[in-house]
Amino acid sequence: MMKPIKIAMMSLTHGHTRKYYQTLRDNPKLDWVASCSEDQQSKDVYELYKTGVPCYMSAEEMFRKHPDIEAVVLASANYRHMEQVEQCAERGIHILSMKIPTFDMAEYDRMIKVVDDAGIVCQIELEMHYNPVVKRLKQLAASAEIGKIRSFQATNITLSPVWAFPWQGIPEQSYGRRVPLRVGDARFRGGALCDHPHIFDLIRHLTGSDFEFVYAEVAPNIRPDIEVEDMIMLNGKMKDGTAFLFDPSWSRMEERLKVPAAGWEVFPKRMEVNVSITGEHGTIMCDCFGPNVYHNGAPNDRYTVQYTYFDEWVGLIDEFVDCIRNNKQPLINLRWHRQTIAAMNACYQSIESGKIATVK
Amino acid sequence: MNMRIMNNKLQMLRNKYDVKDDGVILDGSILKLTGGQCVRLLPWRVERRFIELKKIIEAKTLEDVSTLRFAVMSSSESLKDLLFREFDLCEFLGASRIVRAFAVMNGDDVANILVKLADGKSCSIECSAALPAGTERLDRHEIIARRGVACDRTVDTQVPQSSIYVFGKELETHYTDTDAELFGLCELEILLVRSAMQILQTQALAVEWNAATERIEKIIDKTLQNADRQPAFFEEA
Image (cartoon, rainbow over the protein chains, first blue to last red):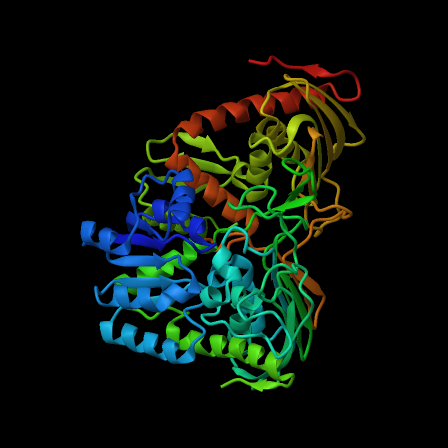
């Protein structure tokens, strides 16, 4: 049995924080030794889960008391990532980053250099690759069953997490800067689009191609009181000619809970990733998170989807461990992911200009 | 079912999760433990949809469960095998013992059954082993409470849904994959490996599952013997 990796969690402000608790405890290849919280509120929420793992109020204190930490999960807001990557890199600590390392492409390139120079693993959390339905989808798309992909539609639609994770509604913390969506629009970059990179990544894997251009439109917000976009759709073309249409909106309404819990959703299904692919010889329709079980019980007596899919974190962590111990590059590493972030940035450029935006 | 691959996967999970106890899955849903003890596997008890339904009940998302409505139709399993799963699910999800059951049959491959649990819940089981050959199993499990209804099928549908539908050169095909660690095994193989793993992780379950098996088999035999005539009664304890 290989020596367990001593791992920690940082910040605890990201919406995915709680998803790691079980797998960090269950995986015998890990020894979860510490956490540090960004603020008291996040620490209070963390304590509700009774992990038994000590939680500090600063990263410095955590690293001082646990000098043997080998790896961290950066469960933080996007605007904290660069600084935290540097903090870890200078200690030679491997990083599992949340899905948006940064939207600032100069900062992104600096991040790549910092990680390269330190010789550490930096894996980006795109957990859908460890979903069994996506595994099958990749297999089918690679087979001759429907032939070359011609057209690709995908939803990555959810409720909005801004009430529980306020940084996702603050442009500086989500997008990294306060950039108006376009002249005359009171909203700023940093909303639903920033929450939903998965389908931008998936199409690259399934087509084996990269983005050529995108064209994006924002609609009036269904939450008029937030200052970032919540309804956005886009289409565009891949370099291999594949035409695509994406919906990465926060189009599923939620109760404004401070801590995610039962009854969070107003629409029955709080999160959906559906993909339709038209190939030269056929079509695939895919629901990456279904079928499930359904109820209309407590607390709100509303028809609700209770998910049966949530093992993505197991495979994600397995890969992270394997990369650290066997000196491998993760599937979703900083270099691979750069094009995905560039495409998302191009969507904002398209909204600003009203024209198509080339992805560079 | 490929027993060799299933047992390889079981060993993979044992190694990954550092489980000391060992065993071999045999034909007929049996796990033979290293010490020689055999355990009848109850794979539905580790099936995610039933775990979630049970969680919905135990978390009081449903309040005061009254009635369970189950249906199962198959082309490849015997009536007794189908009933074994559904009767056990009555007790597993209903969290109470079966005390009475009355079956109405027409031939030896269809049965409509009313079941009573010790705590008063009623269960209905529509059971058919008469689906045309080659048809995939159809089933539905609905739980009705004073507060709320839960079901493993979505509203306004009659047949199970799949995750992926392929409209290709040949006929339409569909896939439902639920387990990334055991990807590549069929659903029943996955559930047998998972249930064997659960026994290895929690050996106390071996006694519980064997006892449930013995009791459910007796309940089925007596229910079918009494079919069309009178309810069969069972001790609660």
